[in-house]
Every structure is written in C-alpha cells, then in structure tokens.
Image 1 (cartoon, helix red, strand yellow):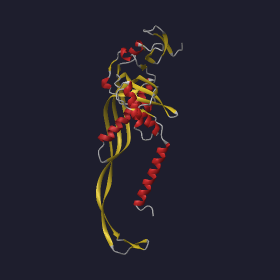
Image 2: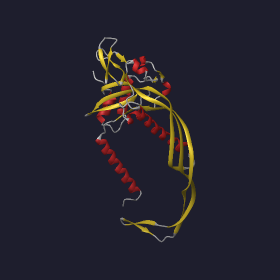
Image 3: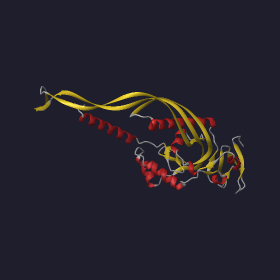
Image 4: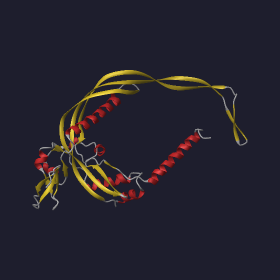
Length: 320
C-alpha cells in the first residue's frame, strides 16, 4: 500500500480496498458500494451543497451545450442532437470550496469626465456631380453652404476617496483537480442551499478533501474579491459620465470561513479524434469545456467578414 492510500473495509462485501488519501468518499472496486471515510470528512467539512441535477439531466445539458455551438463540426452537433452522443466516463464529484465573508476597504484615485456639448458651424463649398458619358464629373464653384453639427466634449476632474464594501459567501475552489478557468466557469453555486455536513450525504459520490494549500486558496480569493470590489466601485459609486480609475489599493479581511462540498459532474466524451473533458454545475446546470472547432465554418466566417467589410468600404466610397 502506498503512502498516498489508506485501507478501508467495505461494509457490503467485506473486501479490504485501497482508497486515495485525498478522497473522503468513493466506491468499492469489487461490489460498487459506497465507501465513506467519515472521520476524515467530519474533521474537514462544515457543509455540503446537494446535487440537484441528475445524471440523465447532466447528459442532456451536455448534449445541448455541444449542439448549440455553431463553431462545432456539423457531424458532432448532429450526433449530440440525435441523442447518440455517449460519454466515455461520467462522475459526480463533491468538490471542496472555501466560502469566505470579506470586508474590503480601499483608497482610490480617479479621473472623472463630465460630458458637455457645443454647436460647431462651418462653411463648405457646394458640389454637384454630373454624368458625362461613362464618367462622373464633379463640378465646383457653386458657392458654399453652412453646416452645423453637435460636438461632444469632455471636461476632466481629479477625484480621490475611500471605499468600503462587504462581500458574503465568496467561493474559492480548493481542489487541484479543476483548473482555475474550469472552477470559475462553474460559479455561482447557491451557498444558501448548503446543509450542515453529514457524512451519509456523501454516499454514492466521489468526494475530495482539499488538495490546494490554504494560502493559495486565500490568495486566489483575495485577488478575485479585489476585482469584484473594483467593479462595484466603477459601476456604482464613481460620479460623472465617464471615468479612468488610476489607482485602487485595497485591504481585504477574510472571515467567517467555511469549507463546503459543491456538486460537479465531470464528463469525458470522445469528439472526433480527441477526448474532451466537460464540467457541469450539479446545481444549476452551467456547463463548460473545450469544443472542437470546424475549420470549414471558421473559413466561411472569415470570408463572410471580408465580404461585409468590402461592402461597407464600397458604400462609404472608400473603394473606387
């Protein structure tokens, strides 16, 4: 037995099997019964967000996700739409997330822009285009005409100030099994639906213990919370018609930390010549994953874009 594994006796068939040290629950390799490391889990977790999305519903969500993509090769979208798309592997995993409450205090310096409008009048020569044979001839010397237009100007002011906000139940993934982009694509989870932890709720699911160091999780949480606070400041609190935030220095206090298990479906599917992995929020059905791209459709989009651009240039007189 390796140092990364522990022995567990199946209560159904009596087999002694190895379980990975980073799992709080799995299944017996002999009879398929649930194996739960209750002591490991009870000492680690504060709550659990239950699955709402069943396995059949997760597969249907995946088929819709693949079938709705215009860029995916047609044969794959048809396969998904027909219901004949079969996964190589599907697992329901309870993934550890830390839930943070955070108090954010910050100082900022910004440039605030206020729009105002003025009238601009100018004299332009009159011109007329006549047809002479097969050529257009432009005739000048017909006097001038007055044109008036409205011009928008912006006046800028310096502004400095302090900012504070409270962010509740921010989730940060504590599993190395999910890439940062995958974990972010699954958010949000409804943390309010979490129930107090009971090891029996893990039965039948793979459940991971935290595999990312706490300092890394805290750093990711602070980085994301700082971005959320900046967005709130720019969207809701800065005055004026436009702005340029020059500096934003924050002090973030994390508190009220809980370790929760969040439901995720992880599905591997062979698409064409490669196997792709998809993750689905087991509560909301949000789905993400890398889809193959049809070269024919990409080429068609490029050609269409070029034709549209040429048409616009021709209409504006940019092409002669």
